[in-house]
Length: 563
Ligand code: ADP
Ligand code: MG
Image (tube, rainbow, N blue to C red; front, side):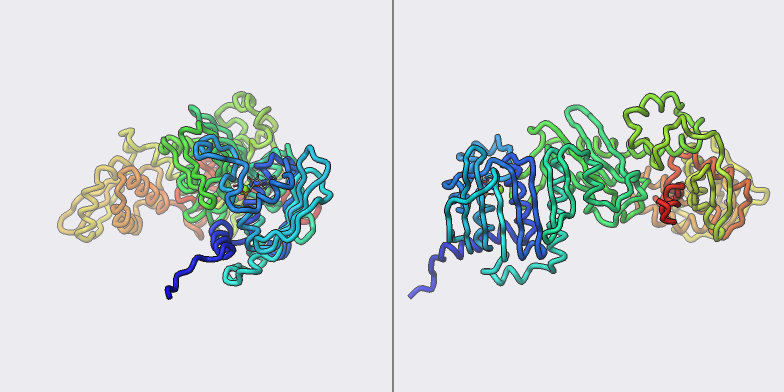
């Protein structure tokens, strides 16, 4: 007697169900997508007990008649395709006819549905995939689904569910993501029967984002829009200071479909380069529209990988759009503090009316309203942070980082122009190097020279420091050179010559900057602050550490609960 047997249909369905849905969030995703596929303009959802106990999804879409409603719970029942060729023209999320059947197979399900044109609806109760009850039922047009007791009949799967709280937040993630991509649809979101938020159709992406993430300060979000060839990018990006420690806040939609950010998120992160510390990630909700023939959004139900036929172009487009938008947002701080800052105010005025809303990183101050004044030095906190005041705005400046930025810009501007502004030392400084370091000196000697740092062989292991770059303080110190040499060993392992040069300049800039604990005069502070505002990036030092933190009067009022 053989031991092989054909599995019972219900067992097969329960196994298959697990492939499509593994937790409440994946049910919610499928059901919300069904509602959108049904043309709904309003969707209500309730997540009870982490969605394990109960999930409700009610829509005002096309609904189903009795026959379709009964069929919809069967595997491979779909209204969306009938032949393989239909896949090419697919505009809906679903097409495999698996989701409802899978959900039904592992839960207790109430389905109440009514087509728009009919006067009555159909009511179905199914348990573990078997229809227990079917008949007419009073219903508004649309579909109302209640999924209860997830995995009640598959304890092995139930065991893998996390705490209700974790499941609930995974559900909220999904609703949020879908809601952000469909501003034309109203979503009402409830948790345990209590309304959390109502997202109205027609609101802007920013408004919707702030409703979903109310702890986000509005001025930390910039809208972005950019067009190149047949590609169009639109969305929101977060200010660099308002960053996260994971990539989870980068959301991508390609031709309206949510995709795994993958290579796209790398382009975003690279667009932020110089603005973010390593290990920090920005907020970004980006919509990329492009010719459907140049992109392949894999329609596998759980994966959403995306492939581009011109991925380099897409990458370059995104990176540039982001970095330009960030630069633009920074110009505004300079305009705020220094209205005479070029590009001229007249040019800025030109685009103030349409971009006014998200023009400034700090606050809604049109450039021409800014006062002509230089910030006043208030103090030097812990010999580390300069305190400045301009009108009713307070600035805290990390003086080391600020100095580093200014020095770095100065060195970088000298690169390749052949001027070599250097300052000869009255007495050359001798120092000893290891054999390896010797090699490195000869390898990078020309570059050092170009930057105004002159080092000469003296005999044996000894070298002589003869001249230092003009304008850099403290460079005469042996300590500086030794630490530069130490760094150089690591830097040399980089392969890209441009990256090596950049790192060398970064080290020079860093080691010649004032350090926390150094004394700095008021005049020096004033002058450094002014130079900083003219620098290429007054917000972040070349290593990506923050330089300026600002407190507006409004924020101070809020701290004291006056607002
Ligand atoms: P798919 O979405 O892949 O077609 P589903 O199992 O998710 O498969 O749904 C099966 C069918 O049930 C759909 O093709 C659709 O005709 C119908 N359906 C499901 N949900 C709804 C809904 N909310 N409103 C109207 N029809 C629906
Ligand atoms: Mg579906």
